[in-house]
Amino acid sequence: MKKLIVILLICILNIVNAQTKYSISFSPIGLYTDFKSDKLIGFNGNAEFSKHFNKNIISIYCSVGLGVTIQNKKTYNGQGYFEADALYSRRYFVNNFLVIEPQLGFGYIGFGTTSDQTPKNFIGFPVRIKAMAFTNNKFALGLYTGSNFNSYKSIYSLGTLFNFNF
Image 1 (spheres, rainbow, N blue to C red):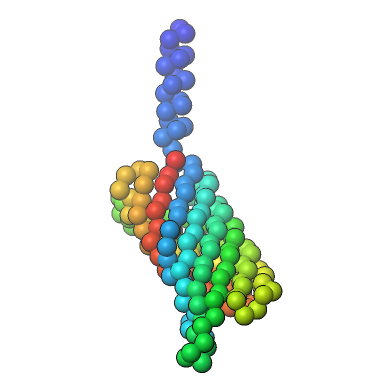
Image 2 (cartoon, rainbow, N blue to C red):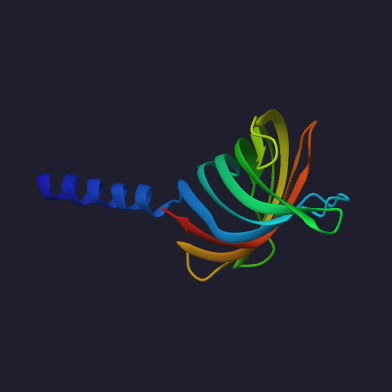
């Protein structure tokens, strides 16, 4: 009887561990811009930690970017941003390995430049879309596109991502 209980507990633990409950996505390098006349362009990186509740996904997302603006075709101004967001999303399976994950949320975004020493902080509303191809149940490669709408300067980003499920 004890052996049967131990085997049953091991089977239950394997079933619980086999279900994906968390994921981490990160993009070591991407591009961002604001599509304005100051021609802001830069590089960014981001990381995201997600908790899966059936089909619903809640995420904490952070992004950092460094770039330059071109003013008067001769003057260059360094610019950077930091973004921290709470996101809601769902995964839509296109086929057995391809996934589309649209995300919406709200959060903080802070901007700083070399010409203005006081940072500008705002509430932002991010919209992102991730397209991922799973190589197995635990790892996926993909692309993301995103934007953060706020009252100062909306930014748009694009990059590759790596996703790990556990």
